[in-house]
Image (cartoon, rainbow, N blue to C red; front, side):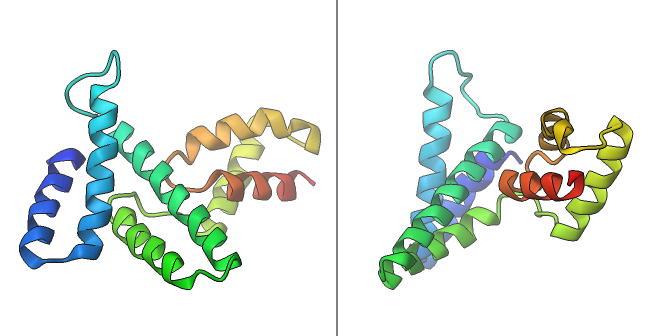
Length: 149
């Protein structure tokens, strides 16, 4: 079952259970999928890898909004964003821990022959491709800087 079909199925389940919190997030996911499917040059269905990229973008938006709401003392709005983020994360691949990322990055750096901070631009594209969907770019960038010195 594709992610698009799973989201549609989960919307029906949430409607039957009268789960408004999940339903709100699921509708946002479906909306993003529909926009991607109807974009010029797109196919009718969104492939799972494209759907994951969309979901990651939505999750990142929720995290950023949540931080802003917390900074401004709007805890009720931050709570809403947190609830939606939890639903969105159900559809994303498991995120790697910082230690797991560090271990794999050290291997990438060794394989690429990088030795100094000047090699940052050489390592980052490799790292972003390697960790696609499994780690946040900010975390990766910070660890690459740390490892390269």
